[in-house]
Amino acid sequence: AYMIRKAVQHENYDGNMIVNDIAILFTEEEIEFSSTVDAVELNDEPVEKGEELILTGWGTTSSITFEECKAAHRHEVFQTQVCALTKEGAGACHYVCYIHNDLMMLELKSITFEECKAAHRHEVFQTQVCALTKEGAGACHGDSGGPLVREGRQIGIVSWGIPCARGKPDVYTKVESFMSWIEKTLYDDDEDHLKFLKGRRRSNRH
Image 1 (cartoon, rainbow, N blue to C red):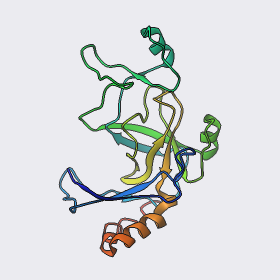
Image 2: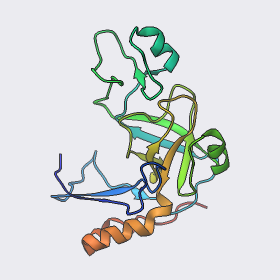
Image 3: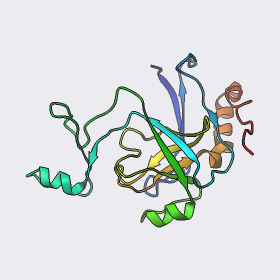
């Protein structure tokens, strides 16, 4: 584990609109890379419809529907809550119940901005990218801030969705839209940080 020295949140972040949802964490010590820990390349190219993407995270799993949750409880359950279920004898005293110790992986496909807007009542912005998989799978609580990756390059950061895995597209902060902000934030802290970007923005797509 590494102690956080400083957190820089985007100056135009809006928690109500959920836009510009990006921050950079600076650790007290330089992170040591190994066979299981490495820096990911950052994507600076457009994402097309139908591209194969990978999401990783330690988020909750086995969420159930609002109706299933209401039927299981005598106490009233509200739309502002989300329920989750795991095997009998395991769980937590919160609305969601199972956070993994093992890193989970999920395959998704990108969709168009127009398709994403049509699927959500909440506003979707051009600085976001959306991905979808089958109902019963998707980003969930605990995944926020996690990486959405295409061919080894991070294209998105988990931002928001309809909890959880309801067959609606998940919404991610689009890394491509914030490359200048990322570079400036790194440079303002220490010019030497830019070494982590050099050579990582090469184009490997045709």
